[in-house]
Structures are given as structure tokens and as C-alpha cells.
Amino acid sequence: MSVLVCFHAHPDDEVFGTGGIMRSAADAGHRVVLVTATDGALGEVPEGLLTEGESLHDRRQRELERSAEVLGAQRVVLLGYADSGMAGTEGNTNPHAFANVDVEEAARRLADVLVEEQARVLTVYDSHGGYGHPDHVQVHHVGVRAAAIAEVPFVYEATMNRDRMREMMTANPNWDPSENEDASQLDIEAFGLPESELTTAVDVSGVLAAKRAAMVVHESQIGDFGPFIPMSDEDLASAFGTEWFRRIVPPVEAPDAVRETALPL
Image (cartoon, rainbow, N blue to C red; front, side, top):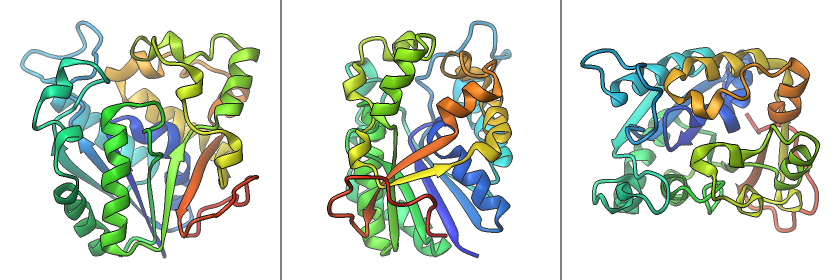
């Protein structure tokens, strides 16, 4: 048995880029640990969803726990930092927001988990956080440092294949991230990485039912997942049936083509 640790910024982030590898690893008998940096309290929420006295923080934590169960995570670790919000928003100025915390301090907290779990593989985000969100960028910095402290053998950046994303947007305008209000000012060229820089493509089409079920669990984030939940199996597989990574530990010097089809668990 190996241990996979997936490090994410907010509740629900675990689904898009690593939901498939989490479920697949668990099904193969490996231990899966999900670490989430923030409470996600600055996310938008559909009007009327929260019950009287219920906070978005509490709702998102419960959704995260249910999602983790669906995706096969045996342990969920909440670092508990404040949500920084999208770039350019008021939350960015909060000194307690994750994007503003000391990298070394946060990395040592994560490293403690990695050492305790004897993690073999850690996933983080690429250096611009996939699309520039301050918390996602900080996940990269904290995760890379924590992996170095804990001497994790394999570290992967979970990201998006920018070339495939462009192709799908051209073929299907409904699959356009700019339709998401949070991403309305983002350029496709700021999303993910070009395929030439990716080292690893994992086919997760066999566990898409779990990935879709985890999307449904995050009711408070229906703005993010809503367009995808009713997709046909074929369209969902086209959009989310492959999860993309760049291996950074040990490094790949010149990834001019995808070389791996699985994580080394």
C-alpha cells in the first residue's frame, strides 16, 4: 500500500483535477489523504441554500467530508486558514488569509502530515495556481516546500491541459470557463499549462460516476459545477476523463510529450 496526499486550496477543488486519481487509488487499495488549506468562506452561495444559523464555512466543511467519502479519501485534514478570495478582491488584504501566511510555517504544518502518513506521492498546483487564484498559487509554494521538508519521493502539479481546453471550447462553446462568474475576466492563455509541459495524463474515465457524484455533493458551489452535472457520460469523459499533471519531483528535464499514464503508487 502506498499513500497519496492531495493538497488543495478550498473545499470542492479536490473534484476537478484529482477526484479521479483519488478514487482510483482508493479502489486499488492505497491510502488517500485530502488536505485542504482554507475554509472556502468567501465562495458564493445560492440564495436560500443555507439554513437558519448555518454559515457557509460549516456547509462547505460538511460538503468536503461527503465529497472525500465519495472519492475514497480515508483522512481529511483541514489547515483552517482564511479564504483569500479571487485576485483583486477585498479578501486579499486579510493578513490571516492563506495567500498571506508565512510559507515556512504553513509548509511545516503540511510536512507534519506528510511525514506522519509516509506520503509517497503529493499533488499540488502549478506555479500560477492553474488560473491565478491567490490561494492556489500559495498551495504551490507551501506544497513544494513541505514536500522538500518531508522528503516526499514524488511531487506532481495538478493542472489543466491548455491545448485540450482550447480545443473543447472551440468545439463546444458551452464548455467555456468564462461563463463562470468568478472566471469572467480570465483568458484561456492563463489557464493550466500547454501540453508540451505536461508529463502525466491519467485516464480516470472508469471512475467518472464518483467524480460526478462528488460534484453533486458540493451544493453550495453549484455555480462552478452546475454546467457539468447534467452532461452526458460522453461529454463528461471528454471534459474530465483525463487528469493532467507535471511531475516536478523528481524533475523531468524536457517534457516534450506526455510520458506517464499513472502516478507511481
